[in-house]
Image: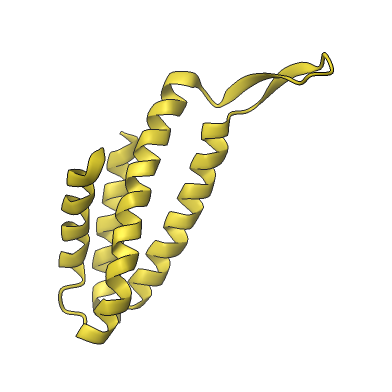
Length: 116
């Protein structure tokens, strides 16, 4: 998933989940859905980088010290996933209870699709 077209498409998919939300709540939710779509693109891009470069990277500081450390992409990915999950929980909590499980299942399905 890359680029503005993918983001617009994903925002439309997410908005469809929340189509029955009242207009006032939707004013709050819409920017969150856009942010979620962006985070999904970031996760996909970071996954590709980690897949290519791995979770570990070599480092050398100026004092002759060198070794390996967790990669920058891996740290960024962890942060993005945490932020995405927190945002998803917040957004899902705004749905009526009867629709929360169905929407949650749809997000779970999406996330599993990203990793496979």
